[in-house]
Image 1 (tube, helix red, strand yellow):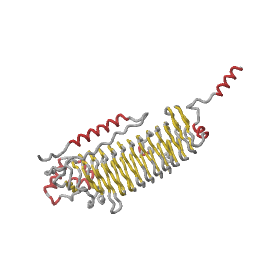
Image 2 (cartoon, rainbow, N blue to C red):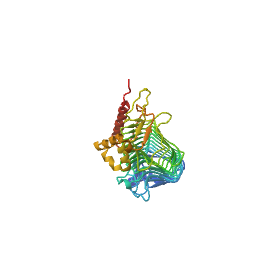
Image 3 (cartoon, rainbow, N blue to C red):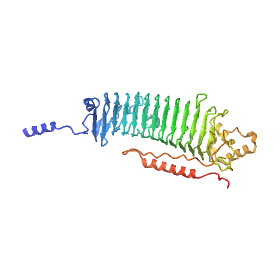
Image 4 (tube, rainbow, N blue to C red):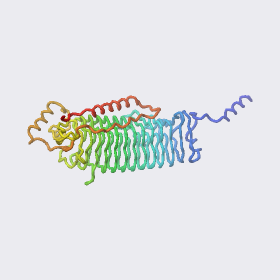
Length: 454
């Protein structure tokens, strides 16, 4: 018996194997000194943990923290916590309890380079200002869209950075009551709202790819937002807005590519304050059902230097009323319109005839959207012909661009962002689609619908 007792004593004296499934992550957290680093090797660790002191937890070899289908996988209740290099998996499925892969309730949190699998909410920051959410890959649960949680949600988390994340199949990426944010280089696909701002001022939304969502980006009840160099495509459904503005002030929309959406940009009471101007410049609106769609009372938007290419309707007005007070030529520069039928006798790059959008059929579709079913049909062309033949029935022009651009402006497509290594998402298909989009834009940019006279 003595050899057996000796062998057992030796086994008990050996340290537990790092990354062992039997090791309790909560016990490691409780034993750690504030400010220390816990390094987890590959393997599975028990989730539903609470971090209540400043710590860094870093993974080597993609260790998995498993929430086992209940509650949050990791809850952060202390400042200065970093989570990086982990697989965060299997939250609970309660929308009422907002079960999340990582739920943080303290400032200065850093969530870097993690993978979220089978999670209701991915990252949820509450009152977590000055935080960073970067280089993560966030999946979702196989639920109906309305029952999913948000891939990334910020609530009262000002001065935070959300950068280079890949979010697929979640409900929304939501930023509420959070000022001075930067959202840069994220790729959000197959959700409801790619990006949804509410009551959040002074944000930069730059270089994101929002594809296959019901709405690309919807900005509401905020001011001083800049949206630049984003690619937004395939926004579908009853709304299908690439970008939607609702009760916004001091917005700049510049350098974006809005391609194949139901509506490129939709404006509702934006600007909402008299005397405020919005700038919509240097964007590509291509192959959308409607390029720009306004509520009839909207005014104060300066639209110039854009390329409107083969949209079903270049500019639409949703509903009845007098539509006026928006500028289509700024500092002598108008927009490029693929259906412009004028000429450039001076060969200076600007049309000598004002581009007017006053076709009769589109005025009917503005009042009765179901008539879009007849777009491009002989019946629609006959209605437009009647409007040109009988000026008394021609509607008031929606657009009067006095300096239309003969050639499309040079608006480069931003570099295509790829997922982080180890992503579980089908990146090849998405990359191929974006490359096809780039090829399309190059082809249309080289094409002019009008030849200058020799």
